[in-house]
Amino acid sequence: MTQMPAVPSVFARSPRRPSLALAVSALIAVTLTACGTEETNAAASPSKAAEAVDAQHTEASVAADQQAAFLAMLNRVARSCPSGGPSAKTLPTDDPATEAIEAPLAPSGPEADLDARDWCASTLHEERITQALWYLEDPTPAKVRKILNGLGYIDERIHDLRQSGAVTRFFLDLRVKGGRLCLDGSAAGEETIVDACVAPETGQFRPSERM
Image (cartoon, rainbow, N blue to C red; front, side, top):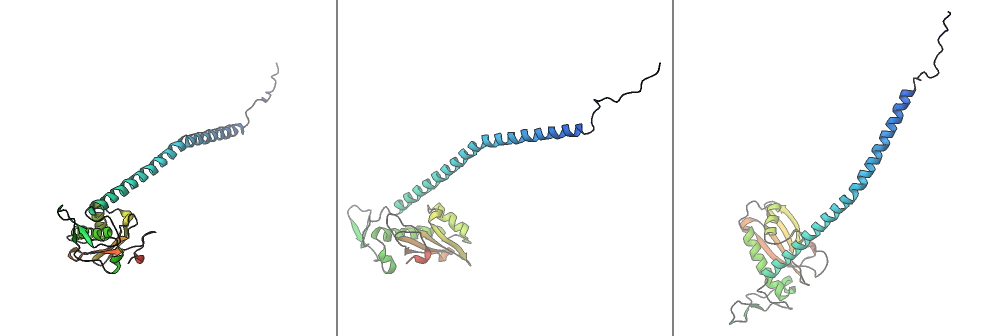
């Protein structure tokens, strides 16, 4: 019997099909990965937004607490001072038998523009800050800021803190309720000096505009 020659199968695999299959599989994988990433980002977005809101709320709360503590400190320092007025002719005393005593010195120069409460408070702030800085060795801006913060003066009210040689200069904005009190300080150990100055009633505090 004569053997018939083999007929090539019409179903023989094409050498290009494996590459095509791999390409399709890769495309599907990339698409699924992209979809998963979008779903993950979409799911994470509300959480990140909530975290951002919480962070802002926390910062605002901390700032409010610091401001409240600062105002409370100002009230404590000036609790023995008169309530205000155009001049500072008298100072109160803790002696109930004496309503007021004559101030040792009347304000002059720029300090004459301070009301009675600010002028009285200025001497108290000058004394407490000078005492705190008197024995400070190597008064760098960082050390001076730390001491001022410890006394209750917040960063928002500390201005132009800078070092020049062995001296660190700073200004404090102590304006409140229409007052004009500011302080001009130089930390230099036993040569520390803190003086009262007068700032505009309103607006941003600028050392160059003080009196």
